[in-house]
Length: 217
Length: 245
Image (tube, rainbow over all chains, first blue to last red; front, top):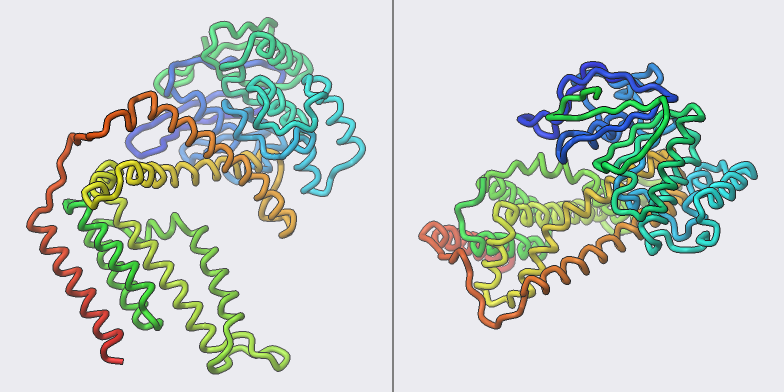
C-alpha cells in the first residue's frame, strides 16, 4: 500500500508540478493514470518509489515514511519500469542482466537461477540469453526490463508508458502480464497516454492528472 | 544572468589563468592564482562554492589522487612515519596540495565560460579563426557534459532500484558495477552523437561554404580594458615568478 498525504512537489520553487495530492494506492488494484504531457504523471510515479523526494507532504510505503528510506529499501516493495528501458539495463548479456544484482549482493542461489530460467521463458527471451541487451529491439529491451523487475517479487509496480513505441504483439504481452500480476494480488500503476491501453477486469481504477492535481475518473 | 563581456575576453581569462596554473612552480604561487580565479568568478557573478559543492564527487576524486600523490612523493621532512618508513613528507604534502590547487584553478577558470551561451562561445571561437565545425563540436560537447552527468546519476538510481546498495559493496564489486554503468552510458552517448550528426546533416549542416551569423560579435571598450588588465596581471605574475628567481 502506498499512501500520499497532502503531497506537493516542485522541481523549481516557482512551478509546482504536484499540488496537495492525497490518495491511497492499494495492492490488488490496477490504476491507469492518464494526462497531458507535463501534467506531472511521471513525477508522481517517481515520487511513489523514492526516485524523487519531497518534504511537502508525506509518502508512505507499507506505513513507512519513504523520506527516511533509501531507494534500495523502497525497492523491496515498489518496482519502477522506466519509460526508456535502456536506463535500467546494464549488463553485457541478457542472462547477466537478470543475475548481476544477486551476484553483487552475494545471494545468487539455485532458486534464483531457476527463477531466471522461468522469466527468460515467460518473456520469450530464452534464445537471447547471450545477446547484448542494448542491441536488441525496443520490445525485447522492454520485456527484459520488466523481467528484471519481476526478479524482485515486489508487491506494487509502477509502469511508466510501458507500451509506448512497441509493436502490437509485445504490447499485448505486457498488458496480459500486468493483468495477471494484479489478479495475483499485486498493485500496479500504469502511466499511459495510450488510448489503446486495453485492460479488462473489476479492479481497475482510472485516474487523471491535470495541472498537478490527481482526479479519480 | 549572462556576462556582458565578449566571449573572446572570457576565453582569454580562461587561457591565462589555466596557463599560470601550469607554469606556477610552487604552492604559494598556485594559491595566489587560485584566489585570483576565485575573485574572477565572483566578478563574473558566479557562486564558485555552490558549483564546487555540486561537483563534490569529482572533488573527492581529486582529493583521493592527492592523498596517493602525497604518499608516493619522497623528499622533504617526514610528517607521518610508520614502522620506520616515511609515509607523508613535507614535499609529498606540498605536491598534493599543489595538485589540488591546480585542478581547482582549471575548474574555476572553465566555470567562467558558463556565463555565455554555447552559441556565443562558438561564434567567439570562429572569430578566433577556429574552423566552425570544430567550434560547433566543442560547443555541443560542452552542452552534453551535464546531460551525461544526469544520465549517469539516473543509472545509479536505477541500480539502487534493483536492490544494490553501492556504498555497501566491496571495492572489486564496486568496480564491476561501475563498469556495468559506464558501458551503457558511453554507448548511449555514442548513439546520441550519431543521431545528432545525422540530424544536423539533414538540416543542411556544411551544405554551404559561406556562413552568416544572426548575431555579430564585437569587442567593446570594456573588453579591451578587461583584456589589458588581464594581460598586465599575467605578465606581472610571470615576471615575479621567473625573472626574480
